[in-house]
Image (cartoon, one colour):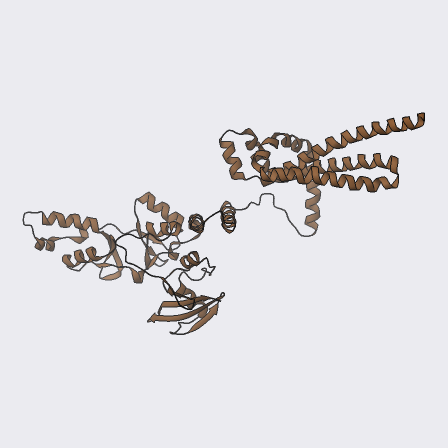
Amino acid sequence: MDEINLFLNQFNMNLWFNGIAIFVLLIISAFFSGSETALTGASKAILRSLTDKGSNGAKKALQLREQNEKLIGSLLLGNNLINILAAALATNFLTQYYQEGGVVIATVIMTLLILIFSEVLPKTYAITNPETAASKVAHLVNFFVIVFAPIVTAIRSVVRAILWTVGIKIDPNQKVLAADEIAGTIALHHSEGSVEKDARDRLLGALDLGDRAVDEIMMHRSQIEMIDADSPPDEILSQCLNSPYTRLPIFQKDPENVIGILHAKDLLKEVDKLVRGNNPGLKNLENLDILSIIMKPYFVPDTTTLDEQMQQFLKRKSHFALVVDEYGTLRGLITLEDILEEIVGQIADEHDLPQEQLLQSSDGSLIVDGNMSIRDLNREKDWQLPDDEANTIAGLVIHEAQTIPIVGQVFSFNGFRYEVVSKEKNRLTQIKVKKL
């Protein structure tokens, strides 16, 4: 009887000791697991915002994210040490009383305890409140990162050596471009329904300005309305008043020889001076010196990025530029409004001429204006037509066909069917497009 009581007392003591020890180890394991999820899942942008508001925890969390390899290594090292120790204690205790069966019992019990209380539970909390959790645990995690630093450094060296032997090189300084990360986040939230299409297009449009050149959105020279400097003053006045544009390039002798930009407001000011002179009347327009009121033309290379060009417009307090190629040949013109339209979409005022670039056909296809840009069509219909080799739909068809198509000719590429509806000389004016 005394032996039984002694056995039970010893069993109870060992049970309490091992139970408390395992309980504490599970809590520590939960801390490591939850911290890993919180610190790796927390948004850097939100942590930065919390830091700006004075949160020291968020500031430390950001610092830990900058040394991501050390952070992950330290947390994994701590977590595995604790889990192995807890499993060893349970196995040692149970094998004393259940021999070989104790190993199976310890494996089942510890797997359930670690999975539920040290993995799923803390990680579930951390993933639902990553920034809050990261801010709370950052300082303590930083302590373990410092303590485990020598061991983690050695492990990292071994891992890199193993990867190097199989031809894999690790670049610790490799980072994802901020613009790519933001664009991916916007696209993800749009696919989940939390960001509307219009908002997505505006945000992505702003991000793309640095990757696109002015020749992609400029008005082609064939569409530019220009003034002949040798025309009579009354004809120039009539042309300016009838034009939907307030700024018109003015040339002399040859359209390639652009000598200035005529602003309608400057012209009207000069006309007003003549009309209010000593001999009022329209005959005074004969004395109008157009060349004295024109502005100096502003030329830009066709390779200038939209972001750079917008900065130049703001710096020069100018909204109008002529685009030239590497040989100095006039290719087109671009305005500040053109760049803004890449962000906010089409901007129209009461003087703009109505333009229908998309018409819905009865068979489900679209009648597209040949001059419509591929980017605009992609944004309008949420398509993914390639715009690497051409800027307009007509240019895309000509590039893929490798010839100037005739009316009625049909092509299929990029998952779409294209039919030439009309053309003027060598210019495709209307194309029927249908997704296959």
